[in-house]
Amino acid sequence: MNSTTVTGTSPTFSMSNEQKELLSGLHSTLGAVFFGFAAGAILYGITVRQAYQYFTEYTKDTIYRKSIIGLVCSLDSMHLAFAMSVVYNLMLQLLGFSHSGPAVLLSVKVHFRLAQFMHSI
Image: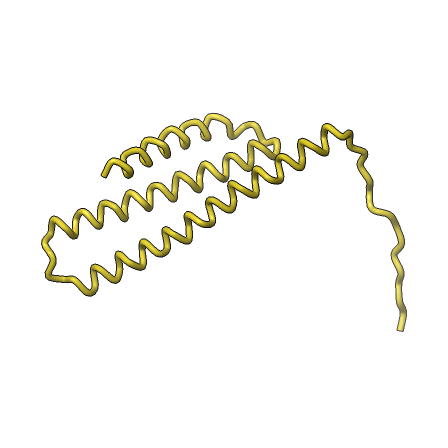
């Protein structure tokens, strides 16, 4: 049986202290953004489950109540979609892909307007 051994060193990069601090700040920022998005996605799943349970168990409720619950679920879906867009574009921007800049601004504007509307209900 032949065995081949590959020896070598991985490339090393020299970083200044300023660059190390910047990367540690970036790591904590992306971690917080991702944790917030993941928690929001879990809560969205709970909302969808509750809406499904409502629509299957309370079939004799008024159309007004059903439409309000449908509207809230639709707004929550749009909120998650815009949050996903913001997180995706923010990560691209922070990792150095600056061509995603204008999309972030539009997503952020629509996301916050949608959040304001949802909180006013």
